[in-house]
Image (cartoon, rainbow, N blue to C red):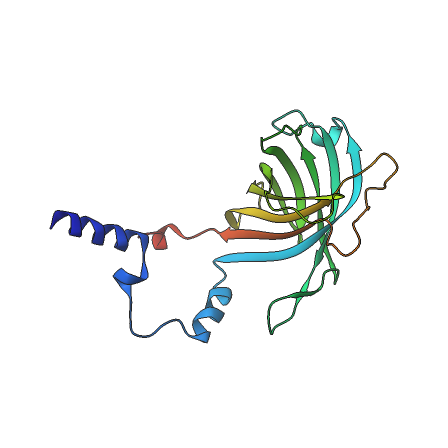
Length: 206
């Protein structure tokens, strides 16, 4: 009996549907309200690399690790096909940019990342890491990895946020420009940036 009680308590804490289910599921108006409520802001965009500087640079002096190189990325809005959510336009409108400082690449270890950027006129600072994926494209001129950054340095209206990327980066040879890409592939990232608004203390109760 105690075990069942503990399980029920855990389900309630986690908010699992089995413990709190109702006959009526979420409606279309519920999904619209998620956005209209304004408790969080979610941005989805793609990046294009326009600058690459090897070695430690002044722009990366604030990074909490020795920087191996500096990159700059332009940020662009994208367009999805409503019928199946496939990306049909990856370069619709410029929406911001950021400077990325990367740590030294080591076999089997995440690569540290520090970034300062601006999206939709919102400044932010990100610290985190990138991980090379087991799944790789069938070409040897690009590498797939994911990055995740915890955000700070946001305006007062925001409590915090994070950034997560799905990245396919072309290898840059000595004679290739920073804008080099692999034909047929999106270089370099599709990114989700999620920001949470500050919540009044009176309403911030479980």
